[in-house]
Image 1 (spheres, helix red, strand yellow):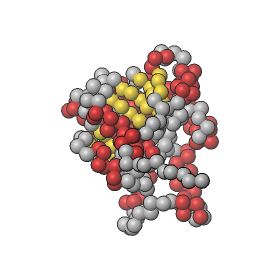
Image 2 (cartoon, helix red, strand yellow):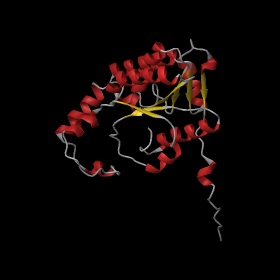
Image 3 (cartoon, one colour):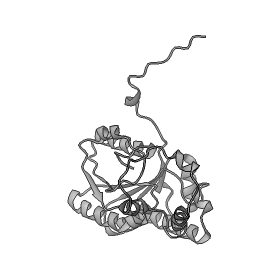
Length: 238
């Protein structure tokens, strides 16, 4: 989730980077090379201008499908997909996504992320590595990055994963076991775990009682006052 991608996940990262710079941090970004997502917001590039940006080879289903498709106009709004019947090809893709790509469709990213992150760490010598989830495959990459580097790692869960009421509960039994294992290994390997609500914070403490309480903390979602600087209150006349 990084420009030119749009959406809430990208906005959070962009705002973090903006205020990190104002707080005398010098962020360096590692992000995917190939975008197969469908939401774009080019205006967000303005807020990350001047921040060093590295990319890693990022193969996923969308990447491989695009290799065999003719170039065509990208549809930004995918609500139309719900009106189309699900064909055999989509059913096969859904089966692969549900049963083989664990913890998600970005699992092939992991070796490339790890290699790129370690290379950048040697060059840039950061004081901290920050990883935002989801994408859940990044949790697996984080395990290796934390073990192979001596740099403190912060893992930020935008959403709860294990024991959440989202897709996790609908996954097959074996997949849930593997996802729970990946989350546990990731939590145990990093120096700090962040989430977005007090409830999620307590859930992490409950799930991982062997970890110190001060390892977990939460930062609630906020807003950027600069985005509303030119907004004038509307006057309601009854």
